[in-house]
Length: 528
Image 1: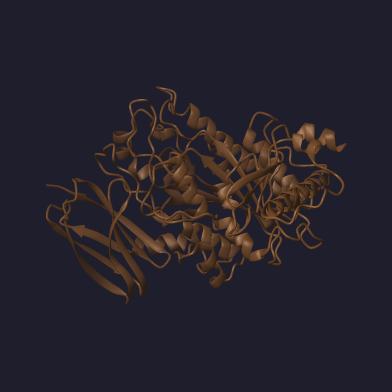
Image 2 (image 1 turned 90 degrees about the horizontal axis):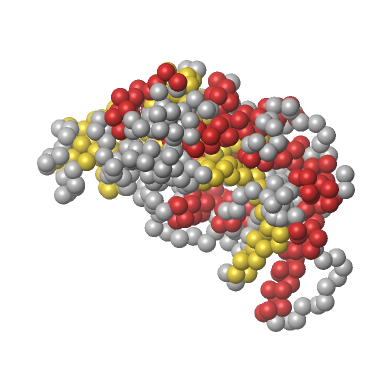
């Protein structure tokens, strides 16, 4: 197949390589169907595939807490999934999936999918743009960073990039975004580390030959930088095409081409990995999760926009994982979803849900701990428009744990990438804890209670923990961190903390107890 024919067949959108020069964004075109994040100095052939669920996925209609069904029915009757249509999960009778997620259900039951419950951050921001920046930079909510967590990781592996790249040892792009564009995610401290594939026009625009010398001025320095990026783009595109053409057969399990955008992109990613591309991380996206209205078809809540999106996600993920097995590369690839936030507990009058706080993340692959990490969120009996799910796990704990156990990032380097220490989570084999079931069993063994509850003027929080670092926080109904009562090492035992009502508005608050990798939450009602 000729290069032009390949491009026309596989890359109908544009290819872009965004780079920053003195804060100004420049782009050299690329193709929206191709994206890869490449090899690092660490001697590993492992790959991470990120799937961004853009818009804020409704977690309560995705991973359904069946033991909270009566509270769900009271809070969101107009979008509620009928209980008899919730997909059952082996070993987890109180938790189920949306009926559109049969493929992900099958992966879960095969031990190749992990649900991480109620992922968020302490002071949630409900702006799409700001919260996306927080998730991609791994910043605190009141902190603005100019680099992304993946960019910082890659910079530790490839210091000095882009000077001297590509080279014999590193012939492929360090990062490729396929049909997605989150440049902050891949922005390193000094340079943009990704290749974004989005337009075939660039293949006809690349200049061959030697350009005129750039002047010895600041403008000339920037011109040299841009020319360097353009040359890299041309060489990297050749590598993408070569990897694509190296594979002649894939699993027949994908949906028909053009019927599931995410599946089409994931199929290309599998082909590039099998074809020998040495890229390490891939990003793709599925858009449309901002379901304020008509999230479901009225009276047929298993259908509608959200059901269609979850079906695309589920079909694509299952076909991709099956293809990895078919191609013999299943041991090398880990997948992970993320969204900028969840949705509110209570639905609105437009058969939709509004911007919320925490929501589930999915990690999938042969080498993960299967099952559910965390417990079903505890829902208030009478949810209001302001009620949100508090986080059980900080999203940065997920990132840090994946970097640590999948890419073998040393602890001291990990702190430089993530900028803080975060709770370790057993997500990937091998891990410190042998199974997710053990973690959840231990979490269930944690004791946390508040009395009197409801609280008017004051109450006690009583908890029992093993020896280790303990943190006890209070979150308001919107999921925002209000106060930290304990943040220190404690011996194993039972402890009691006095909590005063500091003029808190009435509502359903949450106490969150963290002990090492374990956590537990409980509702604290503030009354008058």
